[in-house]
Image (cartoon, rainbow, N blue to C red; front, side):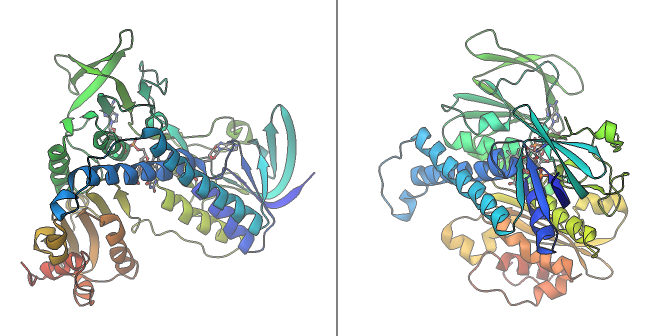
Length: 466
Ligand code: FAD
Ligand code: NAD
């Protein structure tokens, strides 16, 4: 029987990163993966394919709408959807091969099959009806998450799709109805709107992007509406009739009331994701779950069973690839006897639309609820020189600082390249920096990042260009 220091179940960004860090620390490591390819949701049906389509569809839209005003005259672009899907697949393949390479480089055994925990120290791997059992000192559960489903609405991945089907539609739907105005709805809605679909988003709450700063979400909603998105907030879909040529969705106010019917070619269900623990044998192994079906862990990623740990989407916290990766590193370090740690106060979130939305730390709503006195510094891209010359002036930067200490508590950006810009705020916050520190840091001119410096100056009511 093969024997390891660590067996990681699942090779998403949490699992494969944990395995690499453990190997770096001298452990003998194996990963178990039931999918045909490594990389998990993120590489195969999540972050990577969605970003490839967001990039390609943005280029399509730019070529059709923005080139002419810059004096670049091109014929109207034509969509070749199979070629765009091929572009997406090449990106997936490249990244998946990269993970395979990293496993080899770090001498990590890849055990193909479904992993089941037989108890502390034993994992059974089953593939094509054949099982083998391996021994291990430690186990990390990194099995990720699965799509959340709506009762009575069956996903066939053709006409009623999850994000997975929405990443591989064979033609552009005339009418796309999206259930859920979260990250997936807005990102994949952007892709298909740019390619020609009429997009309507039905959201249960009275706002889009719950959890993001309210002012940012409100302004961002207006920007999306200008692009053609139609939002129905405070509304729910209760049924979808699939009997006809087009789908008929029954929609009613969240609080109850008169229903209406909305016609669509494709319905995308994206109302969140749920932890994935199926077939893992957790009950028999005695591993406790919390009240939302997530694997329960302590501050050191340990479950209630000694030697069994869990990280990533399958445990509590934001379902983000970089959160899973950082937990993977910290967990491997803890297993090796080091002081691994994740700072959950500084985990950025990005929505990769046009413009992008990015956020780190507390929102105004968080601070109000916690009764923390804060100051706000805001700076619009309309007053940023580089944005003006590029004619991409939508959006603003908002810096929230502690009213007493000036320590930066949150930064929120809506604007082009917001997803790249947020990281200077992350570094500043990781070091406990103040708005004054940010304001006195020299920023290259002309860059969009100067808007962050100006927003930090605005905390002290001394922005220069406003
Ligand atoms: P996963 O990536 O889900 O990997 C889990 C792996 O475990 C899978 O490969 C699965 O096959 C395997 N597995 C499960 N059970 C077993 C078993 N019993 N035996 C063997 N293998 C098993 N996050 C971001 O940060 N940025 C983004 O831009 C982003 N975009 C996204 C877009 C979409 C459409 C979706 C759906 C998600 C997106 N996410 C994004 C979220 C991100 O994909 C997840 O947070 C991340 O993949 C979680 O990593 P993980 O390692 O915990 O699990
Ligand atoms: P989400 O939690 O971001 O949004 C789901 C939305 O659906 C919410 O606004 C919620 O209020 C709404 N909703 C729930 N039930 C509903 C109902 N019955 N009717 C109408 N609306 C309803 O979830 P998601 O967009 O499905 O994304 C899943 C996960 O994937 C998220 O945790 C997200 O972090 C991750 N993800 C991240 C990125 C990124 O980082 N750029 C991109 C895609 C996905």
